[in-house]
Length: 169
Image (cartoon, rainbow, N blue to C red; front, top):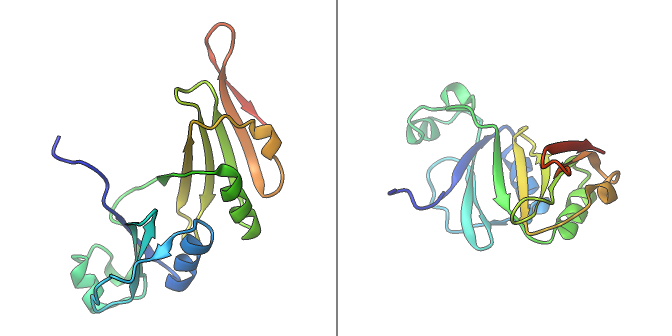
C-alpha cells in the first residue's frame, strides 16, 4: 500500500490559544517554531519531536478559507466525521497526574487480555474532540484509578469460557 503513516491532522479551533494550551499543558506537546507564515493564525504542535497536530483559528479569514480550499466556510468546522484521535503514549501514571492537575475529566479502559495488553485514557479537548491515549503493554487495574478525575472506568476480560465480559467500575 502506498500510504506509509499518518503525517498530521488539522483542528479548526474555536479559541486557538486555549486549544494550543490544552495540547501543550495537558498532553505535553510542544509548539513547532518551523510553521511557515501562511497568512492566517495557527500553530503546528510536536509530540515526541514529530509535528503531528496543526491548529487554525475558527475565526473567518479569507486567506485561510482559500488555503483550506473553502472546506471551512464562514468559520465553521468539519469536512467530515471523525469520532476521535488516538495517540500512542508512555507512562500512564505521569499522564494521569498531568490530566488531573489540569482538572480535565477522563475515562479509563483496560484490555489486560489483549496481546499486547492495552490501557487507554480518554479525554476531550476544548473543542470537544475526543482524545484517546493508548499505552501498549500496560497491565493496569482500572479500579485503582477510580476517582481523581475519572468519570468512569471499564475493562474487557475473557471469562473461563473465553467470552468477553465488560466490567464497569
